Length: 148
Image (cartoon, rainbow, N blue to C red; front, top):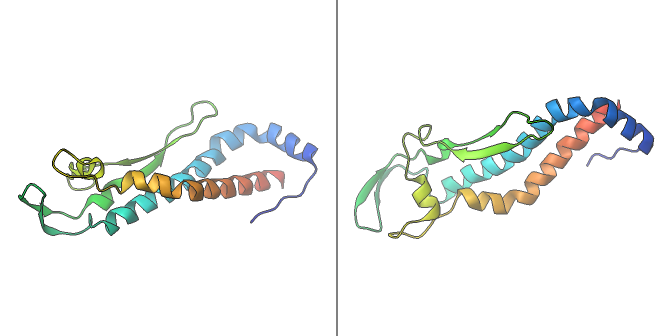
């Protein structure tokens, strides 16, 4: 844990002086830190439920589907450009990076033929608090660098 003890006037003065730097440079890293926690858990969830497994798989409809095992490779996170003082990140799935695994959305949300087997949305609910802690740690480190 990083603890900073300074006069509050010094913090206000430093933040006013370096607000633009903090918003444009450091916030991208803060948001990316939180997004990476969620992304890593989504990848781990996909591996745990067997979406990294390769070979034949019997679908609930009775058809045999040959899995490519590339779904975890299609999960990614990126930070979008600043829009004023707002920085945002996206955690998404790219079927092209996963070797054309277009069916990942069907696996995540289910269909009328099969129940959902969530791996992506589950990561958001499970790791929300951890992602916020990682972002807070990164932000406190950035503010600490600004005060030096």
